[in-house]
Length: 120
Image 1: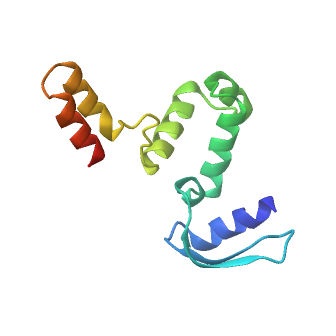
Image 2: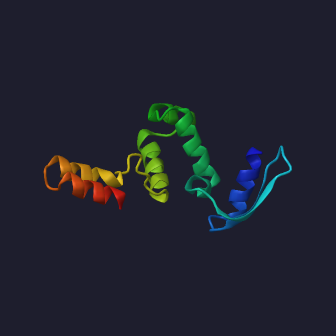
């Protein structure tokens, strides 16, 4: 199974593509449609391996240096290059109501106005 994604990554050579059918291996269920790959799956096989190793090393650059036999700056440069290919994910996006509650707390709007805005 591991070699399947590596072969797919080599075959596509970084070009955009969509998956049109997904079939569960253990069940007789298939889903058809147009599915795009997540950003990590769009990385080259080498970059996917590097990211996997980094996660397995719990983010330790020292362990990455030892594992790959490369220097600290090389690890950092490789991580920077890979991160530039990935979209930023905000783990704590602001909730739509946060601004309303802050304005209410500051006395800028009334409770009635806050409720109206929270309801949309």
